[in-house]
Image 1 (cartoon, protein in one colour):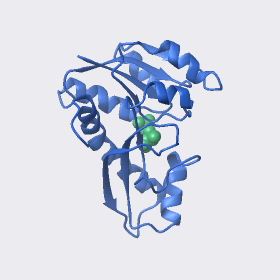
Image 2 (cartoon, rainbow, N blue to C red):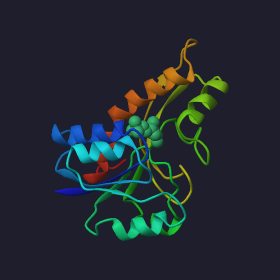
Image 3 (cartoon, helix red, strand yellow):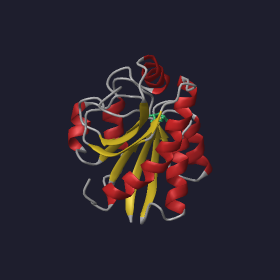
Image 4 (cartoon, helix red, strand yellow):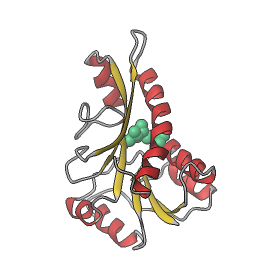
Length: 190
Ligand code: GRF
């Protein structure tokens, strides 16, 4: 049984999807051993509702070192599911190959510092992109620069707004995130 630690900052719909797909077997032979939030958020409430061990480590300069002390040593994969703090390089190096993130765009486009949430979707619409999508990738010390594990796109229509793009991206995330987690846990080549 593989142990996942999930990091959240927001509503945690991707966390919910991970909980549900572990339950229905889409993600096989895994459990969430802990949810860590860097602020009060609904993601933390979801963990409580499902009786998953949950910890709040306030965001700030000591976050990565406190996280390093909090994460169980037997953790197989750390999953950033709508997590907004930047992890320190030493932390990323220690857990190299064992941290993944979901990004709401087609990396390497629309990634990097400041590119999160609505900022991404605003930028995509402003740039008149023909497509958007989501990317699951390994986390390295370079923001949004780690190797992609799974990516899926959709066509943007003339009627799309940042809000409708956000909704469509979320649906894609729910589809590819469990698949990517399963892939990494079972060492399936990317
Ligand atoms: C997702 O769009 C994810 O790509 C981004 O933050 C959002 C989190 O949504 N990193 P939720 O909290 O899982 O609903």
